Image (cartoon, rainbow, N blue to C red; front, side, top):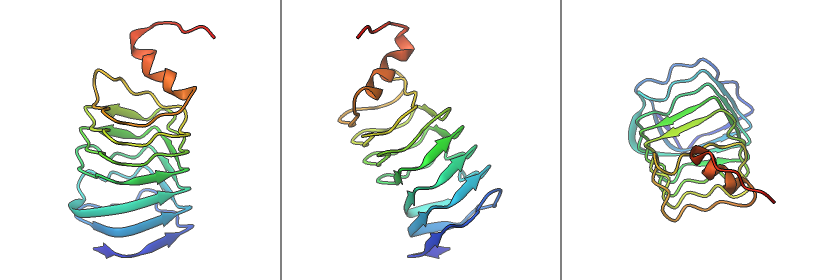
Length: 147
C-alpha cells in the first residue's frame, strides 16, 4: 500500500503491482514499461503521472476517475473498459495507445497528441480537445478534411 508518496525519477519497469493500493501518489519523471495495473486495489485510487514515460502498460478494467497524466509519453498502452471521467491528459503523447469502451467524459486532452479515440466506442461527453489534434476523432469514419 502506497499512501501520499512521491516517486521522482524512478524506473518502475516490469514491476508487479498486483493488489497494491495507490492513494495520493505522484509519479514525477518516472518510467513504466510493461506494467499491468489491472489487478491493483482500486479502492480510493488517486494518482498523478507527470512527465512520465509509460509504454506497453495495461490499465484495463480500472475505475480511475480524475487521474492525471500530464506531459507524459504514453505509448502502446491499453485503456480498455476504464472509467477516466474527469481525467487530465494535457500535453501528453498518446502514440499507439488504445481507448475502447472507456468513459472519457469531462476528460482534458488539451495539447495532447497522437491519440486515436473512436467516438462511437467511447463516451466523450464534455471532453476537452484542442486543434488540430481534435480532427483525429474523425479517423474512424475514414473521411478526409482539407485545409
